[in-house]
Length: 533
Image (tube, helix red, strand yellow):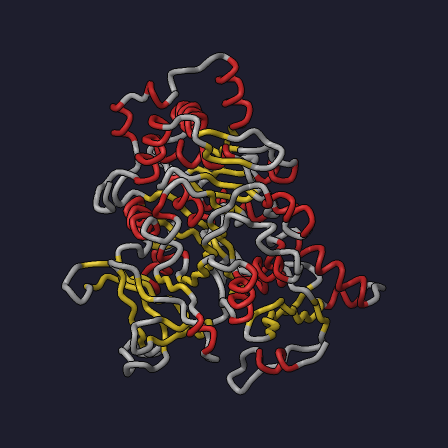
């Protein structure tokens, strides 16, 4: 199948594998039975029938959960019934889940695991479907109509295809509300056609580390890589990621061939000298995206995992995961300049423009990165204003009409056409692979009764954002109460934790009397960053 075909590569290839090798492993997680391709397709079919009974035609559906094969089955079920899926991690705060559901008009929610009481309360206006109970009951009843060998070809008419939205991923928004990015079937098909040319991936049947939450678009790397090639996902739940002994024991026997993560997660593991070939004996490719890959990380991986390729890639969610690729060589590591993020994939062109005027800069000069190509997303869900500001129609150098996206990232192209990423041009930062709008955190802080004003700045070390620091001017009422500063700070932290995901929480909250302003009357962020704690 080619990327030009309107049909979904993920659906077609998953069905093909389920028919040819039904017992091939599709998903495994330590302590859980391995899910085969036959079971994955059958469970997707069971959920598809339930969706048809409960969901309004064509509306996006939330898939709620953490790590479970039913998350993947639910994604496929949505696509099979003409619905975009919206992955929402069950570990998000209930208020965040409610924000997303409200923007989707409180849709049907497929629960791949039981939702806790707070989340259920937040979704009180939505219809919740228990995917575990539905699939278990159907299998117990001996359901065979949904098996791959009983597939009714007429069902293809209901599948998502072409420019239909395949998924909507909600990321941090500057207004304090998450914004949804619509990615089409065609976008994913073209990404898949490119990714399946990567080393190790192209051989087929590889096992991919499945660590990133499904609400984070880095996870599309492993999802596409596995399902488009008959491979397997090895899921690592978040509870293991901070415990080296448990994590290493988990992945030691998993047979992971392709490691997919942010550089920060690899750094977390590399702190332990025991993270070596004994832990990942089969790994042949380390695939990175989401933030800057530093020399030390790449060099240490090359030393501990001789023979494995270390690949650096770049791309915002708005351009379908990634649009560049480069394998880091000894020559790259010997060059003290920051590592390149790679050359553009086929069907994509990179342009470096002046951030103010949008005019092209001189060759080799730095500016804003603009991505033009066939994996640029449709836009922001129900936000034509934001879409018009960041997306536009253009043509490639060969005259092909396409979409383009203003990334807000700084960078330059070298003489070989390699892109070098130089950081954000605005207040959106990347930390541990997550995109965080500082304005989002600030808006949620100022929504607290204890807070009058708030500003959040990144704390950087060795060229990487390591944490966030919040500066808060307390509300007058809060100061009137007989509360010591430490208690007030803790109340602010507790209040914010109920509103934003853990990855957006500032490491420190500093109480200040007044917010410093610059000559333009704006918050002087440089002065705040320079302040000690």
